[in-house]
Structure formats: structure tokens, C-alpha cells
Amino acid sequence: MIVGTIMLATFLLGLLGANFHPVQAQLSRAAPEGPSGQATQPAAPVRSQMVVAAHPLAARAARQMLRDGGTAIDALVAAQMVLNLVEPQSSGIGGGGFLLYWDANRQQLITLDGRETAPAAAGPDRFLNDDGTPIRWPDAVGTGRSIGVPGIVPMLEAAHGEYGRIEWGQLFAPAIDLASNGFGVSPRLNLLLTGMGPDAFNEEGRNYFFDETGEARALGEVLKNPALALTFKQIAARGHIALGSGPIAKSIIAAASEPGVATININDLRDYETIARPPVCLTYRGYSICGMGPPSSGGMTVGAILGLLEASDLGDQPNAAAIHLIIEAEKLAYADRNRYMADSDFVDVPAGLLDPDYLAERALAIDPAQTMGRAEPGTPPELAAMPGRDHSGENPGTSHISIIDQFGNAASLTTTIESAFGSRRMVSGFLLNNELTDFSFRPVDDDGRPVANRVEGGKRPRSSMSPTMVFDADGKLWAVLGSPGGSRIILYVVKALVAMIDWNMEPQTASALGTFGSRNGPAELERGADMDRFASELEALGHEIARPSMTSGLHIIRVTPDGLLGGVDPRREGAAIGD
Ligand code: GLY
Image 1: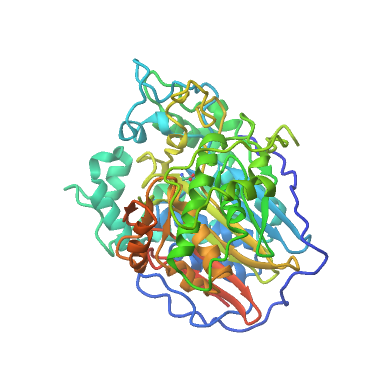
Image 2: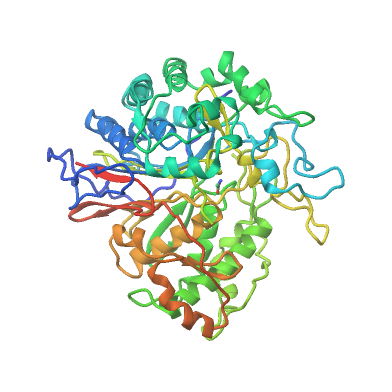
């Protein structure tokens, strides 16, 4: 594996200094970190530094790094490694992610692509039966076809090389300690294992996650993962190269293999590159909303939705008329996403999709009095393509970490192994992803057009992950956020942004707010949440209503004059803690 040189893609945000003070030696005012299984947040703003992550143990490991003088990237590495252990269903070193990093000193926003990659020998027929029909998703997920070359460790190591203060090896200490001495199985882990059952896993996974009778590890059971402790020790000592060579690489290649399929080989592991991409930024109500560009569709689709809404008045609190407008904007943006967005190293993703004139014209299709039904993709102006590398229901398989450190640096990482427990193939104590199922299984559409997101060797599957940072009109960092949730991630992030910017909600309220939106299908209203009160008004506008459970994991930090405010999603088990 070779980590590509990080070419700093910078976005200069004004001449003003960061909106932070030197360390203020206030003790934590965080609420007690609570029993596992309940999201927890500080009772009051904290002054200096904050972490919001999907498990209290991960948040604590990150906070320890911050207290030891580390930066947001140091804290992030510690949190990711602990999450691999305690929330193995959602992320880990067998997966990938996208990172936004705000370097307060240089006033630069960097976006790094650590997305999993298709093996070089993969082709467009990867997910086709012999008769040319696409295979069923359940028949792909637990197979070697689905496993991409993992990217999270190379990406974190590259970012740490540039922005870390604490020695790399030390960042693994909390995870090694917990893997060696054990952690309590959380309600969510127990529930997901019980639902999945032992037969879904390979032998190593089965033996680790289930007892001899096939029962999932019990709630509160102290679980140790000595194999992962050993792997962490090797990465701590040798960096990502420990995964791309030697016995761990051999075991990855063996676990990913599938008869008759071009699966990961040693060259794929060795050649993996972390790619610095330009951030995608768009102005909404005077704020710069910045996110991740292709191969994620997140930044562009969030930006397009907000651009389509820029001229609309959404009121000062949730209301049916505003929800209708947001849903219509989402339909238009998802239609464009599905047609045009994929890995920009392989296909031309039109930058014109975010052209303000294009969005203003497309917004004319939004009728406040009735739904448009299903949206068709538009024809964006022929502006330059998004640069590739040569140009300089619930988805429990993803997690989001937001961090701001005492220096004013910030990290927003959405990290994934794709589905719950990824490919369910465990090796050397960690799970391999099934990220390649994010490719389109069909290489051509019904009209014979090549699908932008078709499989190609070395390509990265389209993502919806939307790590986001918001800057105010003076260029000061205003919010750090993101969420898991598969293709609904975009809906969750848009909801949180509208809730904080238009409806003036604090991050905790925004995160907890019932979810609504559309991926160019029915209007989705979160089952059992307060948004159902808008159903009849939306039906009167012609919407077909669906009520799925929408388990977001919105983890938000807002910078306010009174300090840092956290938002931790009550639908998950995370914690917002700080000092
Ligand atoms: N696998 C989730 C995503 O990349 O959107």
C-alpha cells in the first residue's frame, strides 16, 4: 500500500483568525457518561474542546488525546480504533471513510478520500449472473465480490503525518487496552448480532461474536479481542504497511477470496492511495457549507438541495409547507445524483450540477401547491468536470465522529464498513467491508447508457457520506457534523442544517428532531417520530407517504459565543463530551 502524497486542497476562508481561545483550564462539565446504550451529552456548553462519537468509550479515548495536548486528528485516530472494537458493526480498519479537516493555523480545509477501492482486475460484470441479470444484493453482501481494498488506516496515517502532535503508536493505547482487557457488549451490538445470527459470519467472526451454542454475546458481557489487540500493536509500530504486507495482508487476501471472482490481491493492497480532493462548498443563507466531493455524492447533493432551497422561506420552525419544499428539492437533487455522480477519476461528474443559475432554473419545477411526483435528472451546463486525481432503512454499517480541539482544528469523519458487520468476514480481529455493493450492479441503464457508478478496476464506489463543516459569513468555523445512514445520510445532514440555520435549533434538538425527506421516491417520515403530524398536509399536496425507521447517527458540534455545544443522536449509543 502506498499512501499518496497529500496535496493540500485548500479552501481559504477569509483573513480572520480562528474563533478560539487558548486552552481554558476548565474542568469538564460533561454529564456523566451514562450506562452503555444511551446517548449522552453535556449539560452546558464546553469552552475548549469536544468529541461526539458513537460510543462513550471512543469519545473518552479521543478526549484523553485532547487532554494530552493532541490535535483533532490525534483524537480521531484514537476514537476510530476504539470504535472498531466496541461498535464493530459500523466501522473499522477493514473499511474506509471520508475526512474533512479544518487546519485552524493555516485556515485551510482539507478533504481526504479514504474510500475502499475495487481490485484492479474488477470489471463491470462483477455483480451479474451468467445470464447478464444483476445478482441479488443479499447474495453479494457476504461474499468476496463485495470486499473493497480498505482505506481508513492509510488515510488516518496520512492525515496524522501532517496534523498530528502525539506519536502515532500512542494513539492505539486505549484501543489495545480495551481489546486486551475487555469491554461491555452494548445493547445495540447485542441486538444487531442477535438479528444477524451466527451463520452470517465466517468462522473467526462466529467464534468471536457468538458463544458455543450460537447465542450472541450477551448484553454487558465483557468481550476481549486479543487478535485485534495484536493487529493494533502492529499498526501502532509499523503504520498502514502492517495491513498491506506480511501475515495480516495474507489473511486479508485469503478471507476476501471467492472462486471465479477477481478479489483483492497483494498489489491492490500495496497500491492503495489516499487522495486529497478539493472540498465542495456552497453558500446557503450566508453560510459556507462544505463537504466531500466525488466519489461521495454527499457534498454535491447536500449542496444542490440547499441551493435549490436558497430562494425559499422555510419559516422559523418545522412546518408542512417547508417539509414539502425540502422534499421536492431532494427529489431533484437525487435524480441528478443518480444519473451523474460517481468516482470522478473514472467518469466526468459535471461541476455544473452546483451552478447557481442551473439550480435556480431547476428550482422552478418546485410547486408549493403539489408534488412533482418523481423527478427526472436535469441537463447541467457544460462547466468543467469535478476534478479527479489526475487533475491535480437503517444502515448500521457506518459511523460519524465530530471533533474540535483546543487549537481550533476540527475533524469530521464519516467512516464505514457499509452494511452491519460489513462482509461478515472477520480476519485478524477485524471485519472486512462490503463497500463494493455501493456500486451499481447494472453496468448499463434501461436506455443502454453506461451507468456512471458501474464497477471498474481501481474505481471507488459512489458514497452518500456527507461529513460537513459550516463556516459563517466571516469565515469562522460554525459547525461540524455528519451522520451514518446509507443513501439517507444526505437527508439527515440536510435536516440538521435546516434545523440549525433556518429553525435556529441547538444541535441536540436538531439531531433529535424527527427525520423527513425523499430520495426521489415517496416522502419519508420517520416512524414513531413527531414528524408524522405533517402527514395529512403532505398527502393533500399529493405525496405518497412512507414511514420507515430512520436511524440516523447525527453527531454535531456547534461553535457558539458561549462555547461548544454538542448534539448526539438519541437513536444511537454515542456521547458528546468535552472540557
Ligand atoms: N456505505 C455508505 C456510503 O458510503 O454511503
